[in-house]
Amino acid sequence: MFADEAKIFVKGGHGGNGCVAFRREKYVPRGGPSGGDGGHGASIYLEANINDNTLLRYRYNREFKADRGRHGEGSNCSGQSGEDMVLLVPVGTVVFDAQTNETIADLATPGQRVLVAHGGRGGRGNQHFAKPWHQAPREHEEGQDGEERHLRLELKLLADVGLVGFPNAGKSTLISVISAARPKIANYPFTTLEPNLGVVNADGGTGAHGTELGRTFVVADLPGLIEGAHEGAGLGMRFLRHVERTRLLVHLIDTSDSNDDDPVHSYEVISGELAAFSQTLTEKPLIVVATKLDATTDHSRLEALREFCRREHLEFHSISAATGEGVKELVRSIADALDKIPKPAPDAADALDAAVGQMADAASTIPVRTSVHEANAPLVSRDEKS
Image (cartoon, rainbow, N blue to C red):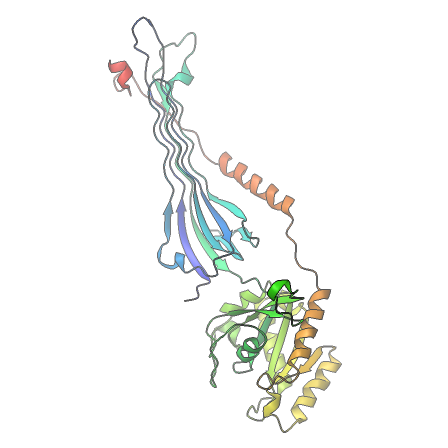
């Protein structure tokens, strides 16, 4: 099952309480305070994992609470800090604060990690409150509560090329021909119910015995769009987030005799739906492809689409995925177009600065509460009782 959305609750561990204790040892008169500090609560991180491709693990397991820190003890023994929790998510996951809708992080690089819930700080024991004029303090600090958050996770697949078009335009057939992907193919609309990814080798190398593969790219086959998708018609616009990261769009249009739709109108409808979802999609480079050439006897609509693309300065191809006609030329044209489009390279320095800044902000938002226990209700360790 493909899952590209999830809502989870994360809570950092509580800090341990500081201890009130006094040294009571033989031959050590007036040993003074010896209460240890509480341990820090564990924090929760999200990490991009290249081996995951879905958020299904967070569909049913939605609450994550980190370990708390242990309380301080006598003899100046500090409590043990909790072990941080790391939640693995697919590469391409965008993390939002579910309450403010603020973007917390975009985990687009394998191994990238972000702090989402800071653990509480451990409280100080009474050893820290000793002064020359106050040599037997019974004050201590309680551990601080861990940060808690409701998060919304959205997966945006990392692909170089996105295939868009009406249902039954031939997207699944094309990706099954040019890659090793095996999506469901049938002669009815909405056969594809979830995105499919395929790796395409544009130069034909096999890669065996050290053979160079040449140029390769990743293609995403998206479920078909229909008019009114941005208002919820059909499968709606749910899967269009997966083409936001692509560098190139390939628009497939069925011009066969079995389809009576005007291909130019089909192009305009899908373009309008893309623009309704995000204006950035309309700015991406585009290749228009007429499909099912083997089932086309009347070429009038095909030529009309070709002429429209010429006027609009759009690259145009006509193919038959069933017979392979024009497929190699299309694949090489896609590879040539990708060579001209720079890959988005994340700035490691900026990512590091953002992570450090986030940790500092999280630490600064944790309040400090001091609890003063009176003599009639002290926290006394075994050392004092002895």
